Image (cartoon, rainbow, N blue to C red; front, top):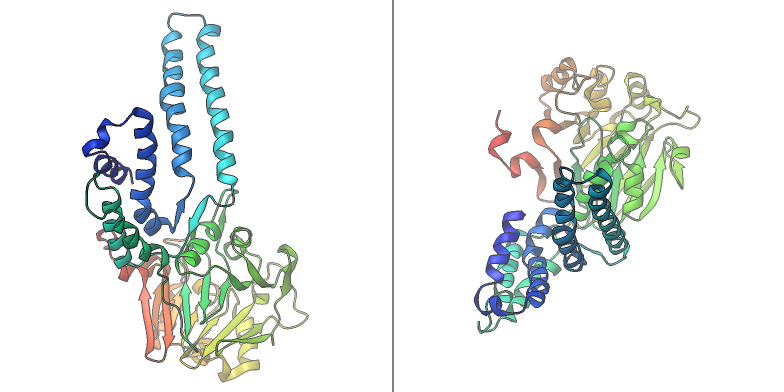
Length: 418
Protein backbone atom coordinates (compact mmCIF):
# COMPACT_ATOMS: atom_id res chain seq x y z
CA UNK A 1 0.00 0.00 0.00
CA UNK A 2 2.81 2.41 0.82
CA UNK A 3 4.60 1.75 -2.47
CA UNK A 4 1.34 2.21 -4.37
CA UNK A 5 0.60 5.49 -2.58
CA UNK A 6 4.06 6.85 -3.47
CA UNK A 7 3.54 5.81 -7.09
CA UNK A 8 0.21 7.68 -7.12
CA UNK A 9 1.90 10.80 -5.74
CA UNK A 10 4.66 10.70 -8.36
CA UNK A 11 2.14 10.21 -11.16
CA UNK A 12 -0.32 12.82 -9.90
CA UNK A 13 2.27 15.57 -9.41
CA UNK A 14 3.83 15.44 -12.85
CA UNK A 15 3.53 18.30 -15.32
CA UNK A 16 2.28 21.77 -14.37
CA UNK A 17 0.87 20.63 -11.02
CA UNK A 18 4.34 21.20 -9.57
CA UNK A 19 3.77 24.95 -10.00
CA UNK A 20 0.57 25.32 -7.97
CA UNK A 21 0.63 26.78 -4.45
CA UNK A 22 1.63 24.65 -1.46
CA UNK A 23 -1.87 24.48 0.05
CA UNK A 24 -3.58 23.71 -3.27
CA UNK A 25 -0.96 21.06 -3.88
CA UNK A 26 -1.57 19.56 -0.43
CA UNK A 27 -5.34 19.39 -0.95
CA UNK A 28 -5.00 17.95 -4.46
CA UNK A 29 -2.59 15.28 -3.23
CA UNK A 30 -5.06 13.95 -0.66
CA UNK A 31 -7.79 13.68 -3.30
CA UNK A 32 -5.38 12.05 -5.74
CA UNK A 33 -4.16 9.48 -3.19
CA UNK A 34 -7.73 8.55 -2.23
CA UNK A 35 -8.72 8.15 -5.88
CA UNK A 36 -5.54 6.32 -6.88
CA UNK A 37 -5.78 3.85 -4.01
CA UNK A 38 -9.49 3.18 -4.49
CA UNK A 39 -9.14 0.05 -6.70
CA UNK A 40 -6.51 -1.49 -4.40
CA UNK A 41 -8.40 -0.88 -1.14
CA UNK A 42 -11.64 -2.20 -2.63
CA UNK A 43 -9.85 -5.35 -3.79
CA UNK A 44 -8.09 -5.94 -0.46
CA UNK A 45 -10.65 -4.75 2.09
CA UNK A 46 -13.97 -4.33 0.20
CA UNK A 47 -14.26 -0.85 1.70
CA UNK A 48 -12.94 2.68 1.20
CA UNK A 49 -12.82 5.52 3.71
CA UNK A 50 -14.82 8.47 2.39
CA UNK A 51 -13.32 10.88 4.94
CA UNK A 52 -9.69 9.76 4.52
CA UNK A 53 -8.67 12.81 2.43
CA UNK A 54 -9.98 15.20 5.08
CA UNK A 55 -8.49 13.15 7.93
CA UNK A 56 -5.07 13.10 6.24
CA UNK A 57 -5.20 16.84 5.51
CA UNK A 58 -5.58 17.41 9.24
CA UNK A 59 -3.48 14.59 10.70
CA UNK A 60 -0.31 14.68 8.60
CA UNK A 61 0.59 18.37 9.22
CA UNK A 62 -0.19 18.11 12.93
CA UNK A 63 1.91 14.99 13.27
CA UNK A 64 4.81 15.79 10.94
CA UNK A 65 5.11 19.56 11.43
CA UNK A 66 4.20 19.87 15.11
CA UNK A 67 4.10 16.65 17.17
CA UNK A 68 7.30 15.05 15.85
CA UNK A 69 9.45 18.26 16.07
CA UNK A 70 8.16 18.93 19.59
CA UNK A 71 9.02 15.38 20.65
CA UNK A 72 12.53 15.53 19.15
CA UNK A 73 13.09 18.92 20.74
CA UNK A 74 12.12 17.46 24.10
CA UNK A 75 14.60 14.60 23.65
CA UNK A 76 17.40 17.08 22.87
CA UNK A 77 16.38 19.43 25.67
CA UNK A 78 16.74 16.76 28.35
CA UNK A 79 20.53 16.92 28.02
CA UNK A 80 20.81 20.69 28.56
CA UNK A 81 17.66 21.88 30.34
CA UNK A 82 15.89 20.98 33.60
CA UNK A 83 13.45 18.12 33.35
CA UNK A 84 10.49 20.39 34.06
CA UNK A 85 11.37 22.62 31.09
CA UNK A 86 12.20 19.77 28.70
CA UNK A 87 9.01 17.97 29.71
CA UNK A 88 6.98 20.91 28.39
CA UNK A 89 7.72 19.83 24.83
CA UNK A 90 6.44 16.31 25.49
CA UNK A 91 3.29 17.61 27.14
CA UNK A 92 2.66 19.92 24.20
CA UNK A 93 3.07 17.04 21.72
CA UNK A 94 0.77 14.83 23.81
CA UNK A 95 -1.88 17.56 23.98
CA UNK A 96 -1.79 18.01 20.20
CA UNK A 97 -2.11 14.28 19.53
CA UNK A 98 -4.97 13.95 22.04
CA UNK A 99 -6.84 16.81 20.38
CA UNK A 100 -6.19 15.33 16.94
CA UNK A 101 -7.39 11.91 18.09
CA UNK A 102 -10.71 13.38 19.24
CA UNK A 103 -11.23 14.96 15.81
CA UNK A 104 -10.37 11.70 14.03
CA UNK A 105 -12.73 9.73 16.28
CA UNK A 106 -15.51 12.18 15.45
CA UNK A 107 -14.90 11.66 11.73
CA UNK A 108 -14.81 7.88 12.17
CA UNK A 109 -18.18 7.90 13.97
CA UNK A 110 -20.00 9.59 11.09
CA UNK A 111 -22.49 7.28 9.38
CA UNK A 112 -21.11 7.84 5.88
CA UNK A 113 -17.40 7.33 6.63
CA UNK A 114 -17.09 3.97 4.81
CA UNK A 115 -18.02 2.89 1.31
CA UNK A 116 -18.55 -0.86 1.65
CA UNK A 117 -19.17 -3.22 -1.26
CA UNK A 118 -18.43 -6.78 -2.46
CA UNK A 119 -15.01 -7.79 -3.70
CA UNK A 120 -14.65 -6.49 -7.28
CA UNK A 121 -14.09 -8.83 -10.20
CA UNK A 122 -10.54 -8.77 -11.64
CA UNK A 123 -11.65 -7.27 -14.95
CA UNK A 124 -13.31 -4.34 -13.16
CA UNK A 125 -10.03 -3.61 -11.37
CA UNK A 126 -8.25 -3.30 -14.71
CA UNK A 127 -10.93 -0.87 -15.86
CA UNK A 128 -10.60 1.10 -12.63
CA UNK A 129 -6.82 1.41 -12.95
CA UNK A 130 -7.27 2.84 -16.45
CA UNK A 131 -9.92 5.21 -15.12
CA UNK A 132 -7.63 6.41 -12.32
CA UNK A 133 -4.78 6.97 -14.77
CA UNK A 134 -7.03 9.11 -16.98
CA UNK A 135 -8.40 11.18 -14.12
CA UNK A 136 -4.93 11.86 -12.70
CA UNK A 137 -3.31 12.50 -16.07
CA UNK A 138 -1.64 15.91 -16.61
CA UNK A 139 -3.74 18.87 -17.70
CA UNK A 140 -4.28 18.94 -21.41
CA UNK A 141 -4.62 15.19 -21.72
CA UNK A 142 -7.63 14.60 -24.00
CA UNK A 143 -10.94 13.29 -22.58
CA UNK A 144 -9.78 12.86 -18.98
CA UNK A 145 -13.45 12.79 -17.90
CA UNK A 146 -13.82 9.38 -19.58
CA UNK A 147 -11.95 8.02 -16.54
CA UNK A 148 -15.20 8.32 -14.56
CA UNK A 149 -16.86 5.85 -16.94
CA UNK A 150 -13.96 3.42 -16.60
CA UNK A 151 -14.38 3.60 -12.80
CA UNK A 152 -18.07 2.68 -12.88
CA UNK A 153 -17.70 -1.14 -13.21
CA UNK A 154 -15.62 -1.50 -10.03
CA UNK A 155 -18.31 0.37 -8.09
CA UNK A 156 -21.43 -1.10 -9.67
CA UNK A 157 -20.76 -4.69 -10.81
CA UNK A 158 -21.82 -7.27 -8.24
CA UNK A 159 -20.61 -10.90 -7.98
CA UNK A 160 -22.90 -13.67 -9.18
CA UNK A 161 -24.83 -15.64 -6.58
CA UNK A 162 -26.79 -18.88 -6.37
CA UNK A 163 -29.56 -19.51 -8.87
CA UNK A 164 -33.04 -20.91 -8.14
CA UNK A 165 -32.79 -24.16 -6.19
CA UNK A 166 -29.00 -23.91 -5.85
CA UNK A 167 -27.16 -24.26 -2.55
CA UNK A 168 -23.76 -22.64 -2.07
CA UNK A 169 -21.93 -23.78 1.04
CA UNK A 170 -18.69 -22.35 2.44
CA UNK A 171 -16.74 -23.69 5.40
CA UNK A 172 -14.73 -20.69 6.58
CA UNK A 173 -11.18 -21.01 7.86
CA UNK A 174 -11.42 -19.79 11.46
CA UNK A 175 -8.68 -22.00 12.89
CA UNK A 176 -9.67 -24.32 15.72
CA UNK A 177 -13.36 -23.56 15.63
CA UNK A 178 -16.34 -23.61 13.32
CA UNK A 179 -18.11 -21.15 11.07
CA UNK A 180 -19.99 -21.95 7.88
CA UNK A 181 -22.18 -20.01 5.46
CA UNK A 182 -25.08 -21.43 3.45
CA UNK A 183 -26.46 -19.27 0.63
CA UNK A 184 -29.50 -19.72 -1.55
CA UNK A 185 -30.77 -17.43 -4.30
CA UNK A 186 -32.06 -14.73 -1.93
CA UNK A 187 -31.09 -15.85 1.59
CA UNK A 188 -28.03 -16.29 3.78
CA UNK A 189 -27.54 -18.55 6.81
CA UNK A 190 -24.52 -18.48 9.11
CA UNK A 191 -23.81 -21.53 11.24
CA UNK A 192 -21.52 -20.61 14.17
CA UNK A 193 -19.06 -17.72 14.18
CA UNK A 194 -15.69 -19.18 15.19
CA UNK A 195 -13.56 -18.41 18.25
CA UNK A 196 -12.76 -15.29 20.22
CA UNK A 197 -9.20 -14.56 21.32
CA UNK A 198 -9.30 -12.12 24.26
CA UNK A 199 -11.38 -8.96 24.40
CA UNK A 200 -10.24 -7.32 21.17
CA UNK A 201 -10.08 -10.04 18.50
CA UNK A 202 -12.53 -12.62 17.23
CA UNK A 203 -13.16 -14.37 13.93
CA UNK A 204 -16.68 -12.98 13.64
CA UNK A 205 -15.22 -9.55 12.95
CA UNK A 206 -12.04 -10.68 11.18
CA UNK A 207 -13.33 -13.59 9.03
CA UNK A 208 -17.12 -13.99 8.95
CA UNK A 209 -18.17 -10.38 8.33
CA UNK A 210 -15.46 -9.67 5.70
CA UNK A 211 -16.42 -12.86 3.84
CA UNK A 212 -20.11 -11.95 3.81
CA UNK A 213 -19.34 -8.47 2.52
CA UNK A 214 -17.04 -9.87 -0.14
CA UNK A 215 -19.82 -12.09 -1.55
CA UNK A 216 -22.43 -9.31 -1.37
CA UNK A 217 -24.36 -10.78 1.58
CA UNK A 218 -25.44 -7.61 3.35
CA UNK A 219 -27.91 -9.37 5.65
CA UNK A 220 -28.03 -12.65 7.58
CA UNK A 221 -31.49 -14.18 7.46
CA UNK A 222 -30.73 -16.83 10.08
CA UNK A 223 -27.80 -17.08 12.48
CA UNK A 224 -27.37 -20.42 14.25
CA UNK A 225 -25.06 -20.75 17.23
CA UNK A 226 -24.85 -24.49 17.82
CA UNK A 227 -23.72 -24.36 21.46
CA UNK A 228 -21.82 -22.28 23.99
CA UNK A 229 -18.18 -23.30 23.45
CA UNK A 230 -15.99 -20.28 22.72
CA UNK A 231 -14.77 -21.71 19.40
CA UNK A 232 -18.36 -21.65 18.11
CA UNK A 233 -19.97 -18.65 19.80
CA UNK A 234 -16.89 -16.45 20.11
CA UNK A 235 -17.57 -14.19 17.12
CA UNK A 236 -21.34 -13.93 17.54
CA UNK A 237 -21.48 -10.50 19.16
CA UNK A 238 -19.31 -8.97 16.43
CA UNK A 239 -21.50 -10.47 13.70
CA UNK A 240 -24.66 -9.21 15.38
CA UNK A 241 -23.13 -5.75 15.74
CA UNK A 242 -21.86 -5.48 12.15
CA UNK A 243 -24.75 -6.90 10.09
CA UNK A 244 -28.54 -7.00 10.32
CA UNK A 245 -29.73 -10.46 11.43
CA UNK A 246 -33.25 -11.80 11.04
CA UNK A 247 -33.59 -14.91 13.23
CA UNK A 248 -31.12 -16.19 15.84
CA UNK A 249 -31.34 -19.86 16.87
CA UNK A 250 -29.14 -21.47 19.53
CA UNK A 251 -28.97 -24.24 22.08
CA UNK A 252 -27.88 -21.48 24.50
CA UNK A 253 -30.40 -18.72 23.69
CA UNK A 254 -29.87 -17.11 27.09
CA UNK A 255 -26.39 -16.02 25.96
CA UNK A 256 -27.54 -14.10 22.88
CA UNK A 257 -29.94 -11.19 22.57
CA UNK A 258 -33.23 -12.05 20.85
CA UNK A 259 -32.19 -15.68 20.34
CA UNK A 260 -34.68 -18.53 20.21
CA UNK A 261 -33.99 -22.17 21.12
CA UNK A 262 -33.08 -24.51 18.29
CA UNK A 263 -35.17 -27.68 18.44
CA UNK A 264 -35.42 -30.89 16.42
CA UNK A 265 -38.27 -30.58 13.96
CA UNK A 266 -37.82 -26.92 13.08
CA UNK A 267 -37.94 -26.63 9.30
CA UNK A 268 -38.19 -23.97 6.61
CA UNK A 269 -37.64 -23.56 2.89
CA UNK A 270 -35.73 -20.86 1.01
CA UNK A 271 -35.67 -20.60 -2.78
CA UNK A 272 -36.26 -24.31 -3.28
CA UNK A 273 -33.76 -25.41 -0.58
CA UNK A 274 -35.03 -27.22 2.55
CA UNK A 275 -33.55 -26.68 6.01
CA UNK A 276 -34.25 -29.05 8.89
CA UNK A 277 -33.06 -28.92 12.49
CA UNK A 278 -32.31 -32.45 13.73
CA UNK A 279 -31.06 -31.76 17.25
CA UNK A 280 -31.47 -31.10 20.18
CA UNK A 281 -34.68 -32.82 21.14
CA UNK A 282 -37.19 -31.11 23.40
CA UNK A 283 -36.16 -31.25 27.05
CA UNK A 284 -32.44 -31.82 26.50
CA UNK A 285 -30.07 -30.00 28.85
CA UNK A 286 -28.67 -26.81 27.32
CA UNK A 287 -25.39 -25.11 28.16
CA UNK A 288 -21.93 -26.34 27.23
CA UNK A 289 -23.10 -29.85 26.47
CA UNK A 290 -21.83 -31.05 23.11
CA UNK A 291 -24.67 -33.50 22.56
CA UNK A 292 -27.20 -30.65 22.87
CA UNK A 293 -25.67 -28.84 19.88
CA UNK A 294 -27.91 -27.60 17.08
CA UNK A 295 -27.62 -30.00 14.11
CA UNK A 296 -28.72 -28.69 10.72
CA UNK A 297 -29.42 -30.50 7.45
CA UNK A 298 -29.64 -28.35 4.30
CA UNK A 299 -31.00 -30.21 1.28
CA UNK A 300 -31.41 -29.03 -2.31
CA UNK A 301 -32.33 -30.91 -5.47
CA UNK A 302 -28.63 -30.82 -6.38
CA UNK A 303 -27.16 -32.10 -3.10
CA UNK A 304 -27.14 -31.73 0.67
CA UNK A 305 -24.99 -30.63 3.62
CA UNK A 306 -25.05 -31.90 7.20
CA UNK A 307 -23.73 -29.67 10.00
CA UNK A 308 -23.58 -31.67 13.26
CA UNK A 309 -21.48 -29.16 15.28
CA UNK A 310 -19.86 -30.89 18.29
CA UNK A 311 -22.15 -33.86 18.87
CA UNK A 312 -20.50 -37.05 20.08
CA UNK A 313 -21.20 -40.77 19.81
CA UNK A 314 -24.33 -40.78 22.00
CA UNK A 315 -26.04 -38.08 19.95
CA UNK A 316 -24.93 -39.75 16.71
CA UNK A 317 -26.66 -42.98 17.74
CA UNK A 318 -29.79 -41.05 18.67
CA UNK A 319 -29.87 -39.37 15.26
CA UNK A 320 -29.40 -42.72 13.50
CA UNK A 321 -32.28 -44.24 15.46
CA UNK A 322 -34.59 -41.31 14.74
CA UNK A 323 -33.76 -40.42 11.13
CA UNK A 324 -31.93 -43.40 9.63
CA UNK A 325 -31.24 -42.93 5.92
CA UNK A 326 -32.69 -39.39 6.06
CA UNK A 327 -29.28 -38.38 7.42
CA UNK A 328 -27.63 -38.99 4.05
CA UNK A 329 -25.68 -35.97 2.84
CA UNK A 330 -23.17 -35.26 0.11
CA UNK A 331 -21.10 -33.01 2.38
CA UNK A 332 -20.49 -33.67 6.07
CA UNK A 333 -18.74 -31.31 8.43
CA UNK A 334 -17.01 -33.78 10.76
CA UNK A 335 -18.67 -33.87 14.19
CA UNK A 336 -16.57 -32.25 16.93
CA UNK A 337 -13.74 -31.36 14.53
CA UNK A 338 -12.87 -35.03 13.97
CA UNK A 339 -12.50 -35.87 17.66
CA UNK A 340 -12.14 -39.52 18.66
CA UNK A 341 -15.40 -39.15 20.65
CA UNK A 342 -17.36 -38.70 17.41
CA UNK A 343 -17.63 -40.01 13.83
CA UNK A 344 -18.59 -43.53 14.81
CA UNK A 345 -18.48 -46.09 11.97
CA UNK A 346 -22.28 -46.41 12.06
CA UNK A 347 -22.76 -42.66 11.74
CA UNK A 348 -20.36 -42.39 8.81
CA UNK A 349 -21.99 -45.31 7.00
CA UNK A 350 -25.46 -43.85 7.57
CA UNK A 351 -24.59 -40.35 6.33
CA UNK A 352 -22.48 -41.79 3.48
CA UNK A 353 -20.96 -38.45 2.46
CA UNK A 354 -18.86 -37.81 -0.64
CA UNK A 355 -16.83 -35.20 1.24
CA UNK A 356 -15.94 -34.75 4.90
CA UNK A 357 -14.63 -31.41 6.14
CA UNK A 358 -12.45 -31.02 9.23
CA UNK A 359 -12.67 -27.47 10.69
CA UNK A 360 -9.43 -27.52 12.67
CA UNK A 361 -6.52 -25.27 13.53
CA UNK A 362 -3.00 -25.81 12.20
CA UNK A 363 -1.15 -28.10 14.63
CA UNK A 364 -3.97 -27.66 17.16
CA UNK A 365 -3.36 -28.86 20.70
CA UNK A 366 -6.23 -31.36 20.50
CA UNK A 367 -4.58 -33.19 17.58
CA UNK A 368 -7.80 -32.95 15.55
CA UNK A 369 -8.66 -34.75 13.41
CA UNK A 370 -7.86 -37.91 15.30
CA UNK A 371 -5.86 -40.28 13.01
CA UNK A 372 -8.23 -43.18 13.66
CA UNK A 373 -11.21 -41.03 12.71
CA UNK A 374 -9.49 -39.82 9.54
CA UNK A 375 -8.76 -43.44 8.64
CA UNK A 376 -12.44 -44.36 9.01
CA UNK A 377 -13.41 -41.85 6.36
CA UNK A 378 -10.50 -42.80 4.11
CA UNK A 379 -11.40 -46.50 4.28
CA UNK A 380 -14.78 -45.65 2.71
CA UNK A 381 -13.16 -43.54 -0.05
CA UNK A 382 -14.64 -40.33 1.35
CA UNK A 383 -12.67 -37.28 0.25
CA UNK A 384 -11.37 -35.38 3.28
CA UNK A 385 -10.51 -31.66 3.38
CA UNK A 386 -9.21 -29.69 6.35
CA UNK A 387 -8.86 -25.99 7.07
CA UNK A 388 -5.04 -25.80 7.38
CA UNK A 389 -4.52 -27.49 4.01
CA UNK A 390 -7.46 -26.13 2.03
CA UNK A 391 -8.29 -22.82 3.69
CA UNK A 392 -11.91 -21.83 3.24
CA UNK A 393 -13.76 -24.45 1.19
CA UNK A 394 -16.68 -23.49 -1.06
CA UNK A 395 -19.11 -25.95 -2.63
CA UNK A 396 -21.61 -24.88 -5.27
CA UNK A 397 -24.41 -27.40 -5.61
CA UNK A 398 -26.05 -26.60 -8.94
CA UNK A 399 -27.69 -28.23 -11.96
CA UNK A 400 -24.35 -28.68 -13.72
CA UNK A 401 -22.99 -30.66 -10.77
CA UNK A 402 -21.05 -30.04 -7.58
CA UNK A 403 -18.28 -27.46 -7.89
CA UNK A 404 -15.51 -27.50 -5.28
CA UNK A 405 -13.20 -24.52 -4.75
CA UNK A 406 -10.70 -24.66 -1.84
CA UNK A 407 -9.21 -21.21 -1.29
CA UNK A 408 -5.60 -22.38 -1.17
CA UNK A 409 -6.03 -24.15 -4.50
CA UNK A 410 -7.62 -21.16 -6.23
CA UNK A 411 -5.07 -18.74 -4.75
CA UNK A 412 -1.83 -20.66 -4.78
CA UNK A 413 1.24 -19.01 -3.27
CA UNK A 414 4.74 -20.41 -3.11
CA UNK A 415 4.72 -20.24 0.71
CA UNK A 416 1.81 -22.73 0.79
CA UNK A 417 4.12 -25.47 -0.51
CA UNK A 418 5.05 -28.28 1.89
